Image 1: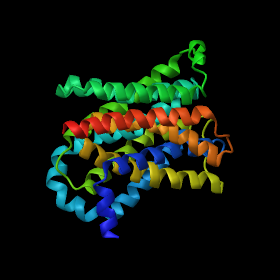
Image 2: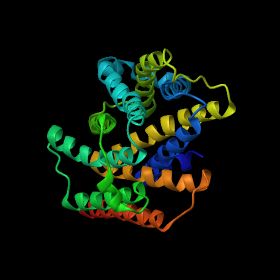
Image 3: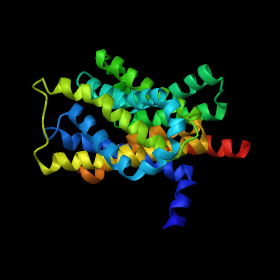
Length: 303
């Protein structure tokens, strides 16, 4: 078991593919959540449960790392609040005003935002081949988002929800770039502080929602199952794997994998929601994977 974990821990591509699979499942969980638990309560609940689990298993590492944590605590709180709670909350709010297509297209801009922020902050220039790879993945996402009808892009209408979604994408991009300069901590300590920060930051959003007609407490098995899934897979495993993947590949290369999220969501919708697998699914999958492999293999060859 230890050997298996070590092999997984050092395999960046497998870690990031699993990450995007869990995040794609988060979109499906969001569909199941409708009518069973309200968005802000789900955001708060998932991070609260994830924080409790991590605090239970990481307390020894937290004690050992406390001298370093104490110096970095304000910065780590901002990272967790912005990257975890902030991104999810802004995305949920954006979806109240804009379409899933618009949100998916804007989210596909995250790798580009990571390129730009890495250059502005660290003067890290993306390789030309990375940009080409990103362009391929972007076309794949557009095909998936428009269900194979790229002419639908002409008819898109943008509104306040799209601006909010851009804010969400920038929030997660800033978090991803910040991962490149994380302090020297055990990964469990680092993840626990980020998740706990997200749980704390999500409380005001849930409290505001509780005063509205949109508030839905989970009283069904479906509602609680959604909370459990999002707490364990997208929150703990997904974020932990993304942190390690970024550590191994760097922000620009790891960020490319984000565009697998809508592809995984589409494929999971076929398996779990009864949607039909169509030609555009296959084309989108091939383009996204080709773009990622193009950037990854070239970078490995250069390295």
